[in-house]
Every structure is written in structure tokens, then in C-alpha cells.
Amino acid sequence: MGLGKKAAKGFLSFLYRNMLEKLVGMIAMIVLARKLSPYDFGLVSISEVLLAIVSVFGTTGLAEYLIAYRKDDSDEIFKAAFWFNIVISVGILVVFLAIAPVWANFQGDDRIWKICALLGMLFMFSQLQGIPKTWLSKHMLFEQQVKIQAPFILLIAVGKVIAAYCNLGVYSLLIPTLLFQPIITILLYRNVSFRPSWSFHTHRWKEIFGFTRHLMGASILARIADQGDKIILSKVLGLEKLGVYNIAVQLADMLTSQLVMISNSILSAVLPKYVDDKERFYNHYINFLKTFSFLLFPVLGTMIVAAKPIILTVYGQKWLDAVLPTQILLVYAMLRVVTSSYGCVMNSFHRVKDSFKVTLVYTPFHLVASFAGALFGLAGLATAVILVKSAFVNISIRQIMNTVEKPTNRWYRDLAPYFLNTSVIVLLLLFFSTFVTTYFNPAPISVIVVTGFLFVAVYFIAFKVFFQNELKKISAFLGITFPKSQSVFNLVFRV
Image (cartoon, rainbow, N blue to C red):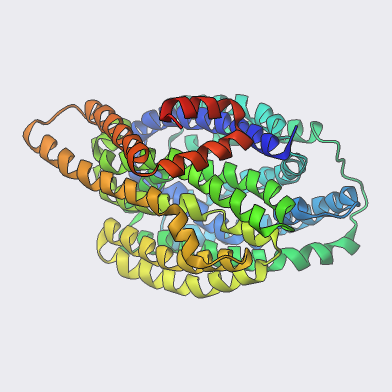
């Protein structure tokens, strides 16, 4: 099987798994959002902030290093990485649990240290799973990973609902996940040929750290920036507002976070194969982004227009404060779809130091903007965050294009049809939706269905009329990666 087809098969495997995860997760969230309060969600969120900041001092960049490793002694480097991972993770856990009581006192709720204890155990299992997952990805055995994880997606979601009805309160968000993690970890290790030895291979740790240090530094700064807005929000507006903001973030990232994670996993394994041919590298990279945008932008655009009825339907009346922040964050989600592969490109060419420099400058701007935005409420925070992120995304794009030796404006020119088409339709449907809901007050579910149908119909017709050449490029990319879907695509769009 060719490299493109392997990548496509892996993408579909992860896609099916994540669709299942999102479906059952959404069903569970409908129940949990009604059983638990915004404050409960805020408690878990602020506890996760501490873990996110502390844990980044660990093995960030380890998976990227192992996937990009091209020498013949990969078995030894995996064994060295296993113990490097264990030692660092245990150290992180000790520091995290030591800080947790102080963090609980700072936030003013004693339950936070108990939540931190549960999160600490989840962190250790997550770290243990990282090495076998990376081994499977490096060998492009994506389907095996999906088969292991898929059954537990349903079990964990059901467990959370049962726990909520058993009146476990905020702990129902964590305990069911923790119960199944040991089983997942064991199954992952049983499905890889790599086996840890009792030799720590410490002589290889310096080599590993030499690659990961800049990724670690960039991730430390990125985590401080991304989690910093939550810390600022919790102190300026309180944990209840943080819970609302967290729901907005989750809804805005509902599709993009998982699909971006999938695409980056596949691209991280595929793009390094093309580093010796920059023209081919760029063509594969940009055509993937075009196809990704073509499929995702209509969904994100629909969510922007129908954010209020979606929140009413899924979460209920008490979460209406999340509507405007969700719409603002969805705008950035569109940009994230086409820029999140920045790390895959830079890692493929081992330019991790350059990406670190961008993050070093970005972090203080993000924190200052978060504080200033929070003074104007949730919408102010969301607006400030996406303005700063959007500004620095342009620097990342310039770095990508310099790396592949292409003019920067070509990136914007290549993707302009997708942004232009989506933006125009969003503005038209927002105007139409405001008019309809003002005078007719339709049921929320009908607004979602009609908005989705209109958006997709107008979007695809516009491509057929104005951007026929883009449809041909997407068709060609599908022919390489998803041959079966190419014929369907060509039939629908008359390519």
C-alpha cells in the first residue's frame, strides 16, 4: 500500500473513532450539563490548568523526536525514551501533588486538591500510553490504535452519566475515565513489538533532550499563554464564569481539536518522507489544507450562525452566556484548521528552535491581552485572545513558506477562496437568522437544521460557480489519498 493510501486509511480510522467520541461525548454532556453546575466545570478546569502548566516541563517533543528519528537503532531509542519518560513523569507528578494544596488555597476551594489527585493519576497513565501510541504512529499502524481505544470511548461516557446520577458531583467528570485507563495502557503495550528493558539507556537521554528542549520550551510558553487566560479569568470574573468560558472553548473546539489532532498525527508521520523534495512537500501540505478546509469550513460556519440554538439544545438555558464567546472562538477555529500543522512542517525540517522563538515573543502579548480582555467579560477575553493569536499566526505562516522556499503571499492566495466563500455566507446567514428569530421565534432545532442546509448548499454552489479549479485540485488530492471518494466527489461536483 502506498504512503498516501496508508495516511488516508489512518486518517479515516482516527476520524471514525473521533466521530464516535464526539457523539457519545455530546450525549453525555447533555446530561452532565444539566446535572452539574457551571461552578463544577470551573473547578475541574482550574485544576487542569495547574497540571497543564506543570506537566509541560516533562516529555514534550518526545513523540515528535521518535517519529522523525531515521537511524537504524530505533528499538534502542524507544527503550531509552520509555525510561526517560517514566523518570520525568514521576518527577512532574511529585511536584504537581506538592503544589496542589497551595493551588486549592489560592483558588479558595478545598476540593481542588482532591481533583488534582485524580488528575495526577490520569496524567501518569497518559504518559505511559505515549510511547506505544508513538510506536504505532511511526509504523503507520493507526487502525490498531483506534481498535484499542474505540470501545472505551462509549464505556467512559456511560460511566460519567452513571456517576452523575449516583451523585458523585464534580468527580463524575474524572473517576470513570480513571477506572478504564489501566486497561487501555495494558492493551496498547500488548499491541506493539517494542518491549522495555531493564537497561535505562541513559547515554541516549542527552540526545533525546537535545531535540526536545526547544519543543519543550515552546510548549511551556504556549501552555502558560493558553492556561494563563483561564487563571486570569478565574480571578477577575470567578470560577462560575470560567465554567461558562470552558464550555464555549469546548464547543468551539468540538470538531477542530480532534480533527486537527488526527491530521497532525498523520502529517507528522508523512511529511518527513518528502523533506528532500520541497515542491512535492508543499503540494502535499497545501492540498491537504485545501481539502480539510473545504470539508470543515461549512460546519464551523454553520456553528457560528447557529451558536445560540446549539447551546440551548445541548446545554440548556443556564449556559446562554457562552453564545457570544463561542461565536468569537469559532472564528479562530477556522484559522486553526489551516495553521495547526505549523509544528509538523517545522519538526519535519528540524527547525524547532525557530518555532520556539515565535512562542517566546507571543506569550507575554497573549497574557497582557487576556487580562485586558477579561475586564470586559467573556466576550472581551475571547476577542482579545483571537486577535493576538491571529496576529502571530502570520509569523508562523511566513516561517513555513521560508522553510519550503515559497513566497509567503502564495499561502494566502492558495487558501483565499475558502476563507472568502465562508465569510460571505456567514455574514448573509447571520443577517437572515437575526431577522427570522426576531419575528417568528422558531424552535432551536429547526434553526440548526435549516441553517446547516442553507450554508452547505450555498457554499458548494459558490465553489461550483466561482472556484471550479479548486474543486479539480481537491479531486486530484483525493485521487492520491482516497481513491474511492474521488469518484463520488467528481459525480457530485461534476469535476
